[in-house]
Structure formats: structure tokens, C-alpha cells
Image (tube, rainbow, N blue to C red; front, side, top):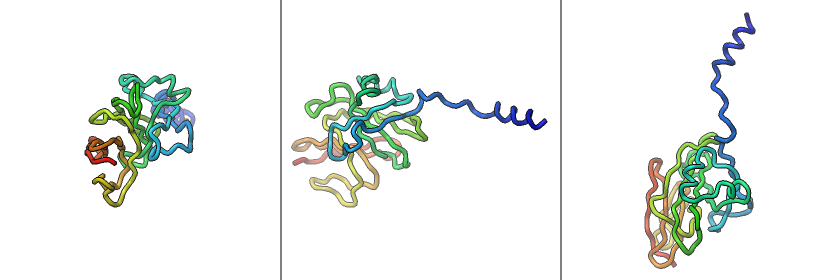
Length: 170
């Protein structure tokens, strides 16, 4: 009788999700600082976000083997890693679309596009005071596209969407 109850409980458990659905990303160079560099590479698998990344030209095979430009942070401040991926042709000489993977428990929770294309993407760290040229203070990490003149853009996620603000640059 006891063995039948154990079998019944085992059958009631939800099936385990396949590893292909898990997000397994890390910096190719663990010493790379996404707050100081525009060229950190993430290597690994994006779980179920493969199609959204391919839509902007991310080569998934390159991501899995050698690495693709990426900014890792916690943009929604939930304690889970999030990843911003610029599209094909990313460089500081031309703008490309960006997709941000929000994760929860090692899986893709949501994929959101930045509201505009970027060229020099970096992590925008937590700041207790506004920065030079009026860059905002923030209690959560965001993204920044450093530019020249009046062309620096800061992106902060408010829990529902990205808010973009434009600032003077050096």
C-alpha cells in the first residue's frame, strides 16, 4: 500500500524542464567589467530566448562557443541575473537593436527590447547622486549608451518597461 502512494506522488510531480530551456550564461573573461568595457562577451546558452536573439542577428553558435557582446546586470532588482544583447554588427560606430533577457530561477522570464538602438553599451551602476551632465541617480542597475555631445542615453527599467533619458556627454 505504501509503494502505491509513492508511485501516485511521483506521477503528480511536474515533469522536469529540459536543459535547453535553462539560461546558462557567463562572461567569457570573468575579469571583464561591463561597467567599464563595451566589449564584454557572454558565452553559453540563452534558454528559450534563442528566437528573439536570432531576430536581431545574434549568432547562437558563436554565443555558445566563443561568446557574444553582452551586459550582465540585475535591471529589475529581483536578485536574478539579466542579460542585454546587442544585435549583429555591434560596435561603437553604428547603432543596433538590443534585447534584454530577464531571468527567474535559471529560466527566461521575459525578453524586452530597448526603446532605441545603441552603439556603445555598458552597465549603468547604482548611483546615490546624479552624475556629471545630469545622468540620473538610481537604486537599480541600468544600461548606458555613451555618446558625444548631447548623445548619451541612460536606460532604466521600472519593472514594466525601459525608460530612456538623454544627457550631455564629454
